[in-house]
Amino acid sequence: MVNGETKLVKRVDSILREIEELKAIFILGQRVIPFLEELFHFVREVGPMLDEINKSLEESSNKIPRASNQLNTVTKTTEVATTEILDALDQMSLKFGEMKGFINVMKQSYEKQKKIAGRIGRYIERGEFDKVSKNWVKFYTAFKSLNGFDDILEKLSDVKRDADNIMVALQFQDITAQQISAINHLIESVQEKLNHLLGKLGNLDIKKDSSVSSRNVASFNPDAEYDRTGAKQKAVDEILNGIIERDEEAGDRASQEEIDELFNKSEKIKSGEGDVNSGNF
Amino acid sequence: MEDGKIRFLVVDDSPTMRRIVINALKNIGYTDIVEAEDGKDALAKLYSEKIDFIITDWNMPNMTGLELTRAVRSDPNFANIPILMVTTRGMKQDVIEALEARVNNYIVKPFTPQVLKEKIEQILKTV
Figure 1 (spheres, rainbow over the protein chains, first blue to last red):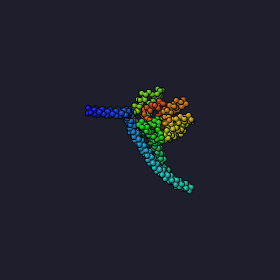
Figure 2 (figure 1 turned 90 degrees about the vertical axis):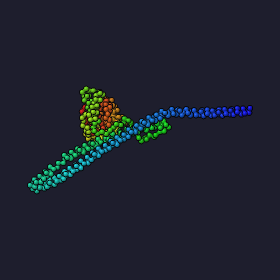
Figure 3 (figure 1 turned 180 degrees about the vertical axis):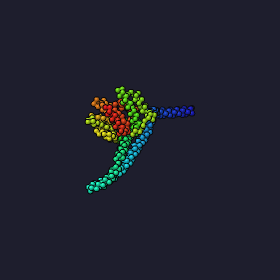
Figure 4 (figure 1 turned 120 degrees about the horizontal axis):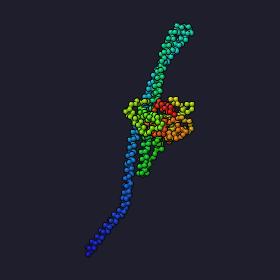
């Protein structure tokens, strides 16, 4: 009987323990479930955010090679224009040297003429007219040798052409300024994307450098290029001339089809299919 | 245009480019020149000075050369002023847009003083 009671008590104790364990499990469950729910929500929210981060990083990283290419273009443009300016300056310096040579020869001839003229004057005063006539021949020979003016004028016109070339080359400054503005714009848009992302992740913010003013997109041409072949102007002129002629004939403006036709013609010229003398600068 | 002297308005946001255009104009004999740094400034100059000829860049802050052209053409007082666009833009669509806005002629940068001279003479023959 005692044995039977003991067994029963042990069994009840065991059941009570199991109930306690179950209770503990339920309590743990009650605590864990909201956490799991929160975790589930987090994962659900993080998915699109990761997608967005991925997209933004992809977009941003696509812009970096473009910025890098633009920087290469700036470097190239600067190098080409600087070389052209230096070449023109070399030519000018050479021509100044040549002109100096011509002027020196002319100066010597002038000094010689001055001397002979002085002598002639003295001979006239003394009435030694046979010497006057001899010296006059000398004077005339020296005068005839004074023929550097045309050479100097020619050199001056060459120098003017070199100066014009420098003025053309200096336009690279405006072109590179537009290329750099395009790079600034790319960098600013990457910065904006990163700011937006960091803001989403934890209200972090990259401070924008207030000294850098963001330029209006309309204030620069990202495709600006330093092309001195004259091909672009030629293409534009084909269009303009076609339209002007047509306006004169018909009294109205050209249609889109006609402009397209003219442009196709110009593009053929640019690609070398047509005959054109490029390099009209 | 007084006594055959043409007063030019040179519009460009780049001081270097303004100087280059002015220098080229002076070299070809035009010395009466007014400057503006963008379209807005150009419009103000147009109202305050007597201008006969506009040479404008396209890409500028505040007001582009294209917007300036449209503004000028829509004002009956200035609708017939010759406008020469001098720009880095040389794409087909750019030329079409400029023509639609009614520029008189178009130069692609970089340009030579000779091209500038020819274009000005071409415009002056027709106006």
